[in-house]
Length: 381
Image (cartoon, rainbow, N blue to C red; front, top):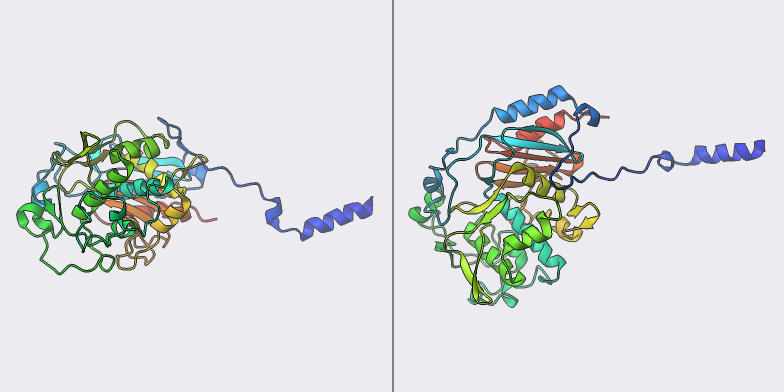
């Protein structure tokens, strides 16, 4: 008996400590209509430093006009509606799946500008999942034959090039030409004429081309993008019913004998995604969890990995997501951090290394400044 005990003890001493570790806790996913809160102390955070981070965020509001009266000057002649009032700066901090901080009117439904681009990327991931896009390197015109890719220049454009904003698509969408030439149409965003490059050879942040991409997604699904986003993404993650993806007044196309709306990838010219901070946080949390939600893989894991990999020509840019692999877009954050960024600023910052999702809206400065302060509140083990 002693020999047996000694043998068992010897075996135990030889085993790695991991063999005795408790299994990793299953990630928490908030049910619809509720998001559990935890005190910072319960999750090993320094409450004083977290409070300092929130105070910093609250004190740095954007200078954008609260009544959107600067919209035309900034972006040019609008094509769609705008609200008459925006919220003050507000935000939500999600750590390890739980709410640890919030400030401001987080339930105010506001335009979120180019965060909608990352949402379009997610819809493209659903198209890949369902086989509606067989290969992102395939020319869009091979499945979308509405004339938008008929020219010799546009014919080679691939889905991937649209996602990386390297398509160089040539043409006009809803009255806005992709060259961004003209002050009346583009306001402070007008650009000087330049020679188009071949598709896939040049990065340009360009809402007219993204709107063409959004229309192409409508074509492959055979229904409006907001319906896809609601049914395949927002409903499964328990989002509210307060968000809305508003089209332009002229962005309607005929589909199966009726007019349906095609939405934009931003609010540069009005319309766009109107949403509160909580639904933005759920969306960010889906991406933090690699496209999975409570055991269901909503966005394919392979697509998520590719979407968070930098393009060849972009400024550390993935599939309509801003990356930090060079440490420049989100200074001071890990190279694995990424973000959905909208004008205003309306931002979702995700740091997988810290299991952290931060929504910060209508603020001044780089969103990393708030995130760095939140990360400083996480006690090191």
